[in-house]
Amino acid sequence: DTAVSQTPKYLVTQMGNDKSIKCEQNLGHDTMYWYKQDSKKFLKIMFSYNNKELIINETVPNRFSPKSPDKAHLNLHINSLELGDSAVYFCASSHGHKNSPLHFGNGTRLTVT
Amino acid sequence: GQQLNQSPQSMFIQEGEDVSMNCTSSSIFNTWLWYKQDPGEGPVLLIALYKAGELTSNGRLTAQFGITRKDSFLNISVSIPSDVGIYFCAGQDYNNDMRFGAGTRLTVKP
Image (cartoon, rainbow over all chains, first blue to last red; front, top):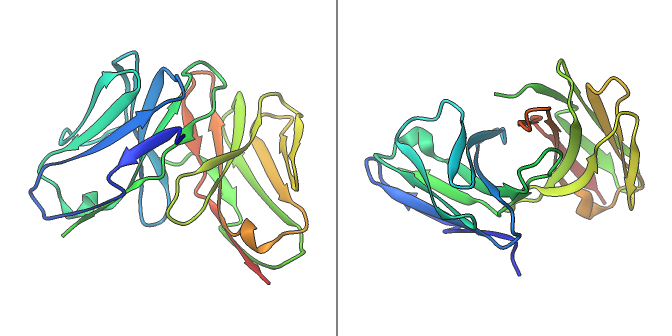
């Protein structure tokens, strides 16, 4: 019955590799997001998708690309991983209209060695 | 980056004590939200506030939407060990953009 689920929970990989993180929501929301949480716990938005349209991209390197096959899924693909990409990545979803709170997944801890 | 000033950064309290934390902004928000994050998990919504001056409770938690729409506070009464975690405020503006505070790390000593 998990509302927002993301996989994998942990991802350890070497510099230069390409990896993907998957996210699915069963809340019927029409907007999905990716957030990055650094070691200081700052939550920074990376992307949001509404009806398959990218509507936010907050100065994220183009090595990061969100892919949404449908309204219930928003995957995050990362090319040429760098050490600084190590962080916890959270998927979230909302109804997308004003005053709609975000619901978060449990995060993917990415470690780049 | 962060546009909300959340304080305090961390708190160490004794079980049974009351807790208060707040967020301020230079911008007006339409919605204020408070989340809690436990270790290894994602932030979970505690309270949502939609109107200036609104005061809302959720069990031992009480939050208020500041009358100027630029601030909010969260109070936890009679803290218990499971209140431990990181509490985030979040403000949502008229463009539906959401910004998070830097978090308040709460430690409760039994």
